[in-house]
Length: 373
Image 1 (tube, one colour):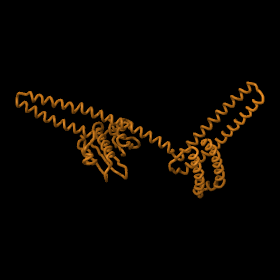
Image 2 (cartoon, rainbow, N blue to C red):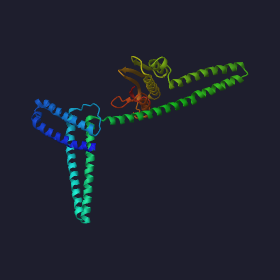
Image 3 (spheres, helix red, strand yellow):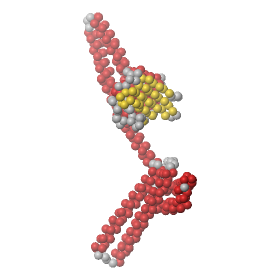
Image 4 (cartoon, rainbow, N blue to C red):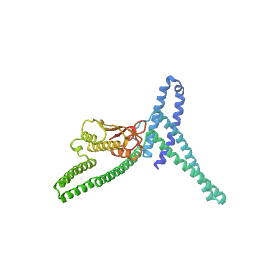
């Protein structure tokens, strides 16, 4: 019932809008046409339109339970909304009047049927015609109600319910992305351990077995020396796998030193510009580290670059990570590599006129990938 009352009240506010435009046009029309007085006349017109628009906003909030965030529409938006709302409200009044007229005719028809028995052909014609008109009236009212809601959204912005639904959708998508990222990391660690560390440990065990069975002391010493070198390589690879899971330098030394370790391990020259004052939350440091690590690794593998620049800056509450290389570029902005970076750090922002020169896929264009954490 509140929606019906709101629609009927909307017919009255539409009439008020029509009277306002007619009166303002008669009073301010000449001043709006004269360049010297046009600005002040327009300001007066918009001031009155804003009051009527505030009444429309109150009507949507009371009768339709729309909660709009604080948003100041432009003068053009206010005038366009009020004009469109006036036209839609008057049309709604006409359709409502036709519906009421049809109900009155239906009542008269029912009274006539009660007094006498008309022919079935005449009765069938009246019922079919009345049903079609009733359907058209109801459809018209529903369409006008949807138009009213859309006009309010365009002027006042999305309502709190719509914003909450968007936020829920974003959170669900980010949660799914986190689950996929964790699963990818787990599979990668399993693959690294199986294909790398495990194979080296098997080779080390075989070397120690051969050294144990060797009858020649010189051969046993050579095998033990080889096993010692192999154990060092196993430790280095195991340390590399552990760093890719979580770098302990983040806890002990901080983000700056951890990024320095990424630069040292990269096969390309990497220059790190670090401009961050004060401590960072652990989650932010971890996200920034993995974004830089993955970007640098992919750039070294696929971009054909000669050098890489990593810039980490903090402005207010926003940490910006910029990874730039001089590679060939050409990755798909919607591909898995950039989606992974967005999942790590909160979303890549496209550079160079909307095309991101991605780090993380072959055939890149020279440029940068920026992530806000």
